[in-house]
Each structure stands twice: as structure tokens, then as C-alpha cells.
Image (tube, rainbow, N blue to C red; front, side):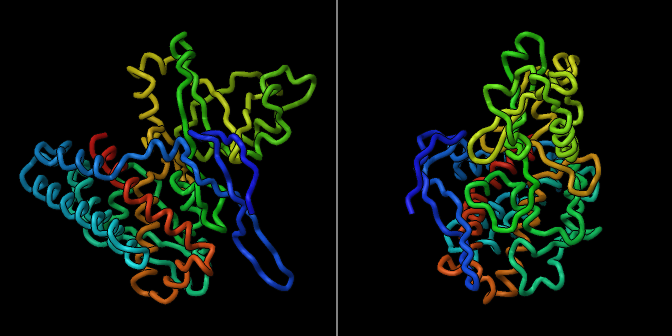
Length: 384
């Protein structure tokens, strides 16, 4: 059924959306509806073509960064990147039946290059360091789990990248929305965690005020807020509960801990509702931020990770003070999908059948975006 055209936030063109059914069950009939846009968004426009990322990665091999300049590390760095590029190239040329196998092993080889550059010791990776959760047969994809172990590649890279680990029995539905590339086609049953986009308010920085806008916050925090009144005096209304709820939500994002509100307690905190079910708010950082960092981008690089022409911040998944690194999110998801495709091919075939499975298109979309998102992320990790 054709839906009404609207001007969505983050759209490069007026999005023409289509209202589609994402699940239908009988006894009684339940129809879940969602809007799907076919037009380019700003996130799409920021996508780096994979050939450009691989070209940049190839250029690093004649002068490896970090610790990979020594002869033995250099050989691992170059050969691992060559294997990663070939495996991703092969993954891009095949269908969904085998794509996760090639993509995961491409990422696994890329991890060896990351360790050669950044690991002070134990830089030769051994084993996956992560296993598929037990008892997942018959569960939905979002309910399937991964179990990282204390040894192996996964745990070593968690340490090297100073990342939050992924707790035991973490469901794919809690990892999937952390990748902003999945927003166009969310996985049914996904959780509420997500990465958030951050940008500096450059007019503020130019006038000596370190202001940062945090975007893509779930819209529920702005319920009842009228955009034109969100900075008003409040007219006697107490906004403390709204501010407390938002602070509780953002407390899981360690790199946002230095934020303060521009308004006093009980006043509107400046939440701005947007289309696509999100809102944003501007926070202030300590004044010394201006002298500590040479530019707004240098500051954003200290709290976030570059992705598709934007900076993004991530929550801590283990309750600690380190955000999870998106490379480890990709690792966990691609590993689990590869295990499904390899050891449960009949279930994988059913799950990826677009005629019967609501998971099929989200899977296709994630694996398709991995072809460009992973090499771009890999480049940023290697040269950080």
C-alpha cells in the first residue's frame, strides 16, 4: 500500500515511502506495519565505496602504520590485508547463502592486521575467541546469542581497541541496532541500544563555547515536546523527570560523561524531535575542551568513531567505562551469521527467504552494507 510522502530528517531527497507488512499471523490475524523509504538518506550519501577504502588500505602496505613497521609484523600486516581484500571481494560477488562465511573470514584476517599495528604484545592472533550460543535452534535471529571467551582473537582485539566486551549470551537483537548501517531495515525483535551520532555546534566553538549535539536519541524522550517550545521557559512545567530519564539512558555511553545541560534544573533541556523516530539535544562540555583539542574533529575523534561521514558514540555493553567498538560488533554478528550458514544451512536458507521470512531483507541489507562499512571502519582503526 502506498504511503504518504513526507520530508524525513536526514533525507537528501523528498522520501517517497511504502507501507509494507513485516509480519502476518493467523488466529487472530496480526499485521505489523512499517515504513520503508526507497530514497537516499544522508547516511547513504556518506557511504564510502568499497574500492576507495581498499585502495586506501593498499596504500598503507608500503609504509605500515604503528607497530607494523618491523619486518615480521610487516609481513603479517600486508598478507593479512591482502587476504581480507580478496575474501571481501569474493563475498561481494556471491549471494546471501555464502556471503557471511567469506565476510567473517575476511574480517578475521583484517583483525590480524589490526593486532600487528596496535598490539604491544601477543599480536599473533589465534582462534576465533567467540562461540555460538547453545540452545539457539528454533529461536528467532534476534534471540540467537554469542559467547565470547577469555582467549582468542575476539578477546585480544577487545583489549587492543580498548573496547567494552560483549557479555556472555548477548543476543543478536541487542547488537544489530548498534550498527547505524542497519537503520533502514531493522531486524525484527531488536533491542533499544543503538549508536548515537554526535556533531559539534561550530558557531558555539567559534565563540568559545564547546557545544555538542547528540542525535538519534529514541523519540520517546521527546514525547509531548513541541519543537518550537523546546527551549522555552517551561511556563511552570517541571522537566526534571524528562532530564533524569535522558541522563539514565545516556549514562551507558561512557564518552558522553563530561556533558552538562545548558539549562537549569526543572527547565526544558532542549530536546528536538525529528522524523524517523528520533530526537536530538545540545550539551555543553568543559571549557578546557577548547584548549585540549586542536579542532572540533579532533575532539569528536576522542569520544567517537568515524562512520559514513559522521562521528558516532557507543554504549558500554558490560557495565564498564569503555564503549563497545563497532569493529567488535561487526565481528560478533558476522561470526554468528557465518556459523548459521555453515552448520545450519537449511535454517539459513529459510531465514534468508524473502518470501516467508521477515529477517531476510534485514540480513541482506546488513551483509550488503558490510561490503563497504567494514573496510572503511578498518582504515580508520588502522590509522587512528
